Image (cartoon, rainbow, N blue to C red; front, top):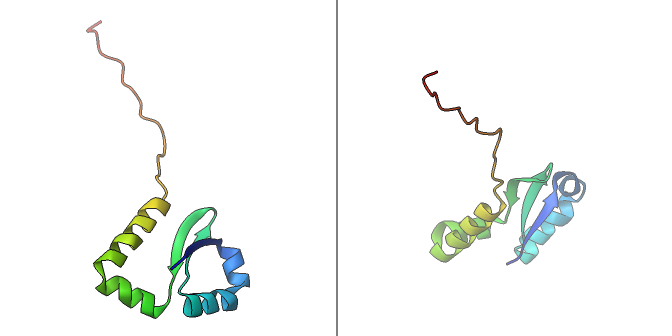
Length: 85
C-alpha cells in the first residue's frame, strides 16, 4: 500500500482518478490545504483492515503523527525577577 500527499485543489480537479487509484491500487491519499494535512482518502477495505489489524493501526498512527503539524504560537514572556527595589 502506498500513501501519497496531494493538495486539495489538485484532489478536487482529479477526484475521479484519485478514487480509481484508491479503489484499484489501494493507494491512500492525504489531502493538504495550505500545506497542512487535513483529511485522508482510503478505500473501505483499507479502512476495515485498519480497524481490525493492529499492525495496520500502528502504520496509520505513525503516518498521522508524522504529518501532524506542530503549532507553536507566540513566545513565552520571561518575567524579570523582583529585587525588592
